Structure formats: structure tokens, C-alpha cells
Image (cartoon, rainbow, N blue to C red; front, side, top):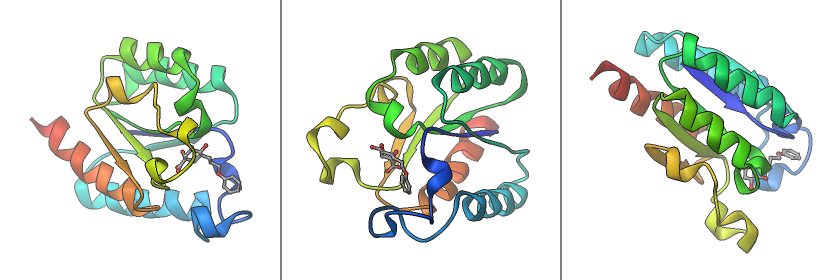
Length: 142
Ligand code: CA2
């Protein structure tokens, strides 16, 4: 399983705790690792601030991962390149957001990722990643 994180998510816990909470990305990774272990899933966890690095990691996932859980950060709302890469990967995708993007500015209401996703989880903070892992465990065991 690949859990992919986009730009600025490395800043979690360091700024804007009122929107994104106090947990760091390392805390979320640790929680994901514990959940993946309980679900008997192998886990790769990756973050980049660079669109091309995210595209390359998705390309690699085609060979190495059974599914992709992605919080693309702001690239969610801008990146046709990530959409194309996810389509080409031909793996189940679950889109995750910490915040409820529909409660926020209108420009966050559109996602380029959602059309390729099996489902979207937003507004539950870091718990969303764990919910996505549980949903993905079922999807890949089918
Ligand atoms: O709610 C989410 O998970 C988002 O994907 C987070 C993105 C935002 O652009 C999306 O619209 C929704 C931003 C991540 C930035 O995270 C920060 C955390 C702490 C300090 C600064 C940025």
C-alpha cells in the first residue's frame, strides 16, 4: 500500500493547528504503520513538495503497490499531471483530506483526483488516513 502526501503536509503540527491539528506527519505515519500492521498490509509512506516527484512515485506504484491512498494537498485542486499518473497506475485510489474541503474556500471544492478515486474521505483529520487503510484493505482483498 502506498500512502502519498503532497505539498506542505511536512508542515503539519508546526503551523495552523486550528485547521490541520497538532499531529505531525511523522505521527500520522506511525499511526498508519500500526493500522497497516493490524490489517496485514505492507506500507510505503511518502511526502513531497514537488509535483514531478509525486508523479514518479505514482508511476513506481504501478509495479510495487496494490493501492494508493493520496492526500495531494493543494495539487488536488490544480494537477492534471497527478490525475493522469493515477489513471495510468491502474490501482485502486482513495483520496484523503484532513480538513473538510467543502467547508472551505470555493477553489478547494474541485478535485482533479476525485474522478479516479474509488472514494473520498475528508474532514476527519488524521483518522481519515486510518479509515482509508481499512477501506483499502477490503478493496485489495476482493
Ligand atoms: O485538508 C487537507 O488535507 C488538504 O489536502 C491540505 C492542503 C490543502 O491545500 C487542501 O485544500 C486540503 C494543504 C496542506 C498544508 O498543510 C499545512 C499544514 C501546516 C501548516 C501549513 C500547511
